[in-house]
Image (cartoon, rainbow, N blue to C red):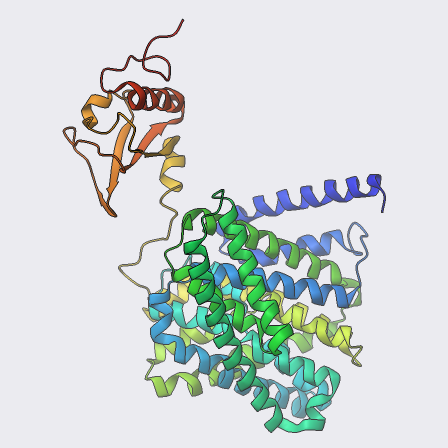
Length: 502
């Protein structure tokens, strides 16, 4: 690759990314998961569109797993632990027993009704049974359902990758036929349990490390957290041969729950990085697909398998898993219908492709069509179904980044002023700051206690003061605060040293 070719790749990549970012707004208005638009972009760029050829299944498999690690990291960091903890047992049962029930139903339908051989039948069941973390996280956070339901679905989607990855790999290589189901069940238990424990250990050690090490810049904390999450995944996979997906999800849950420095900056960075991973993953999978290769029989097969996994298998899996936990029928119905398939089934379909399994290409095409059709059906219907089943949380409020969203609408900045011991701001009343009109002191943090100040509130050394300033007044406000810090309450208006400068 020379510089000219690199420049072309950068141009196309940046243009695709920009269009994908703009498409997020369109998908939100239509109520569709954004993955549909990204897959469509991949198809438009591929051999049936602009003619870009991409058929490396092994590379797609590797990049797909890397993207899933980033997506699971973001999901774990932003999941509210108080919602997930009470329903974690149900999430684990859905991710194991529920997956087994779904795989069994789909495999039997494919073998006995459609006449497919057992290897392809089990592969179709294993590939299509897991829910997709990115699709679940993106849709559910726009639908204010009860916290219990949101927690169950998020926990399930974060944990069910592990057993399905193992099953698809063993079936693709033929190992499951040689070693039997008992060996597979033992492997699943080992990978999930030890992977989760390893993730817990890495998360606990990471929290202790980040609390004790003062990094030189706020921008280093998000990088450190992403690195620790990847270490959890890769360390579990390489060193212990356990589920890296379970490890990284648990590590991210621990890090998201901890009180770490610069939490909002970290969440913003990881959120953006996860969007980049989703966009790249879906566009790549769209490139890997070939519409010209898909026949009518493949579409019909996708419809039959989709009905089997979405209606029969999924509802049976939820009923068997949730009934012992006394989950009401309306909540079971919503959990069953909200088990969205997204990138995960398509990524899993690259495993038999990479292992050159007979008819693996057809499996990939069928899964690709299935994901497109049933995501288009399920995603937009979730808000309506939640209202019909009366599972909406009446007290729910849409989650916003309160340190960013309101200030953007006001065209203002949040300034944080830390008062050192030598500063002459100490002893000055809020009213004596004489800040420009339109600027307000919104909060004072003193000895780990926050309060809203009054005009007569006296500032002290060690205080952290939050000041809201319109963009046009920001520089003037900064100059004024620095002037008072150096010259005290009688500081002049101009210059940072408290006196007029000519």
